[in-house]
Length: 601
Image 1 (cartoon, rainbow, N blue to C red):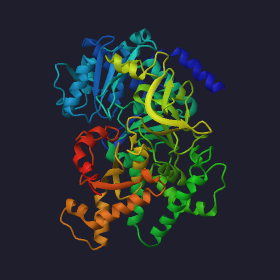
Image 2: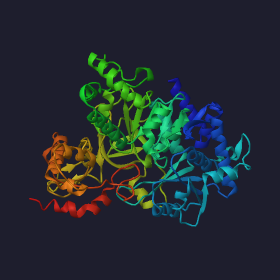
Image 3: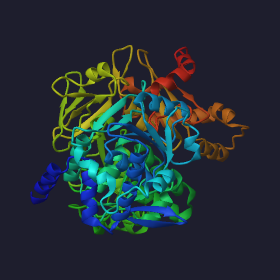
Image 4: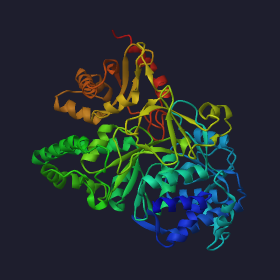
């Protein structure tokens, strides 16, 4: 109770994110705040050094005419300069407009135009070349160089401006990735983020001994809150991965205690584990297969509402409240412990968000001693609405609502939420705002779901993504797609069949796995297209679909499918930056192929 009261009292004194940051600078001083890999090794950045960089950039922005209320964009990969610049922008009373580093030039300039940005800060020449608008453009290096002579030692320009901001002040415009329509500028306030930090801190035990490895894009609200503001709020150290490809190596170097990921990250991690088993031979392979089968069956045994296996660093892999069997102890010694060591060896838990996590994936990792806490939220809710806890979790759900957040289910099954986490609205889009935000503060999430008997929230699907067959049956595509992706032969899938008499599917196959299968079967082929057209390949995929769909209702079964010879990509506009399928775009691109499947009788 004392801890909760202290946090609530602290919240009353912090009117903006800048004050929150400087409170931590005063508290932690020369302790390590950030870690960045330079010249082949991770180097420490103290809280005082962090603050100095923020003050220098804030001074440079003021010197270049940036004023309170101006919108300033950031176009960059994850790095310390991103957070320096964000806090500097907020320090001078301006508004941060984050842009994904992967966005093409057309999208970058559309956001700059819509947000009426006064300036943009870029990380390098490649990002600079995307900016075509008539706008002030700075690099991180330029701001750090120009602001040095202007910054006030110790106090800094920024600390004088921060008190003029309150919790209602606009902090950011985040443009939604738009899986079905045009992106909208979501207006989030300092109070939105502060309330979400407070709520999450009360249910997820992050502390100043934690080391967090950041690799999800800071332009996304999930990483912005959970991997940045919340870590500052709790005094944790943030280390930055070099890029997406080096995450496994960086985990070994940093030895994080906490990480956030999206479902695709965990799916790839699971696939890599299974692939390593397939590549091993003899006794080693038999032991691994036995251990992971034990993990697969063992996860559900311990998933009643209760404590997880990773609640304390010295108790990793030991399910609390359940005496480990001799088999589990042996599997843990020979296999599970080695797997955890490859993830740094100190991981207390993962947090998953942005899209639904397959229950089977969560159960598998739980079985090997790695707890994944799935949460739920949207950009418009800054973002966290609910999450599982270390001491109360249920796989297949997104947990319990966090403190201060109201959630209810509308008559049509849509999830509604109300509280200090809900956005001010969409920028310059009053009609669109009124469509989702009621006069009494309830936000329509667009997601379908419900509560179970213990109060855990379960997401069924996106309201607009629901497929209604010609027979009147409602089908949730994400649930089925997640099942299909459990097969090592299937990388991605998109269900189709709205107003149709049966379901069909686009399948992105794992071509290297299929090549290995074909070689083993003595099949010959010349290229990927020929390989995917072979009867043996189609029979294999059909078997995999049947295997993963065996528990589905008859109307949820897939009758025909199309195999794509290349993956869906962000560059082609088929995936969002968080790797969710843009259904409208993908459907239009492959509509002719899909429609032909309904001519097959």
